[in-house]
Length: 254
Image (cartoon, rainbow, N blue to C red; front, side, top):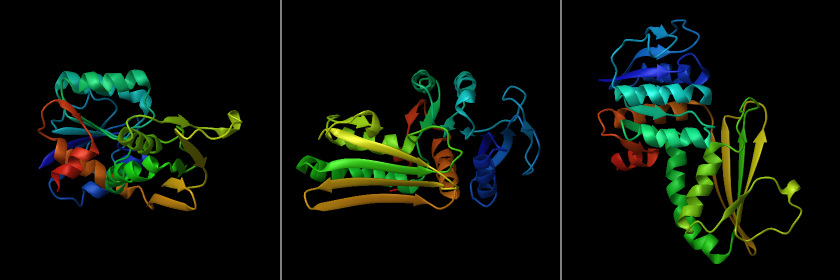
């Protein structure tokens, strides 16, 4: 049984993960960390990692970027594997993630959905053919009106996947209203939409001469991210120090 500490347990995603974990084999949430220390799902809840004192095999984090610094420091010191799901990290925090991975296993992904991470692989093959043939690349992402960071970490991951396949020949254009000029063939346009209760929609458009190829992914509930986070926890427990991604989780299942 994989013992999990849920960091941000009483947040929206923490609650979704907790409900799903209760019905999932081989995992158990043994404690939660949250400023709101109400016990909702039966396991004990603490306001800080230091006061927790419950032994676990891995931490799953779905809190906020402002809590990541201390979380990384704690997991690094304790050698406690960490599934880091929080997005919107600064460059300094991203660098700290890499340093922490030298001390313990850290799995970081811009999106925990198994579908999105499969799409990342498919896009690389498509880019080599379509972008290589001169197709323009545009990405449109849509999320609920409470999402703070824009563009989404997932949109950037999709762009990075394409750019990697093309030898990093592209730069990113985020707002065309600030750049009144003809489109650069070596740019990837990334646009963000915020509204209502949209869980998450991502569309990657390859637009060529007289034809368009579109890849899209729609999340209808947050359960898709929760499922991926728990699969990541099962994968990461017991792993050696290093920086892992959802691609490693998918590879282990094939």
